[in-house]
Every structure is written in structure tokens, then in C-alpha cells.
Figure 1 (cartoon, rainbow, N blue to C red):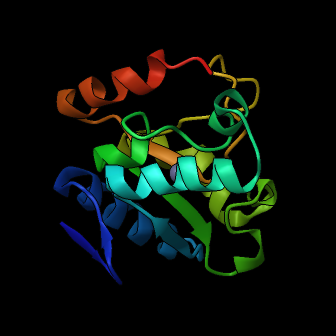
Figure 2 (cartoon, rainbow, N blue to C red):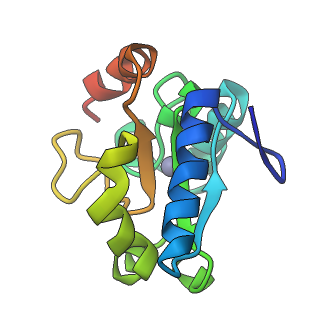
Length: 152
Ligand SMILES: [Zn+2]
């Protein structure tokens, strides 16, 4: 299902995002979707090309970007969210200080969204306050399993 401006997401997750955006807007919060589905091919170049460019080993690269086949974005159930009022915090840890993040931490669970990589997560992935995943269907939970098994 399309989310507009080239963004794709599975339909249940997209419907939940729309509902969250409306509820947030009613409280004056501009919740923006920055990224949704990413194909394995795109994830492959994000992982291997950048790894080579930065002269990194796989272990180091996996702390900030999942290897192809392990990214939650390849499931179509994960999103990167931003605050339309504070675009300078997009994909940065400062996002945690925005009204959008505050709103999400209070309400996202009601829409089956949860933070994938909180501070000190067991996978050793760096803290990503902007990256949320949909856990409102068994299909989604099944697809997240390989990503959760990966311990870089
Ligand atoms: Zn993400």
C-alpha cells in the first residue's frame, strides 16, 4: 500500500500510521513518515557499499545498518518517523526531544507500534528513536523474528 511520495508499507501498518498521524495532528503534532519499505536490493547497497566506503567490517556496519535480509524495513512493517515541525532532528538521536517522539512514547502502543532499538538494546544496534515497527499482526511478528535473532 502506498503512503504517498513513493513510500510503501503493508496495508495494516499503513492504516495504523494514518490513524496515528490523525490523532497526533489533533494534538498539534506533525508526525511524518520518512521511510517505509526498502527492498533487499536497496538494503544490500546500504549495507555493503557504505561498509566499503567507510572501510568497516560487517560487525561495525551492522550496528547502524542491518545486513540485507535482516532489515526490519524489508518486512514492510517498519517506519522511520520524524517531526514535521523540526526536520533538523530527522534520523538523529535529537528526535527524542521533539513533540512527535513524546507523542509516540505516550500513544504508539495503542496503534501496535513499538520502538525497535531502544537505548541499550540486546542486539547492540545503536539507539534509533525514529525507527518504529508494527506489531499488530502475527505476520508482522513472524517477519521480525530473523531481525531479532541477529546479534551483531
Ligand atoms: Zn529505520
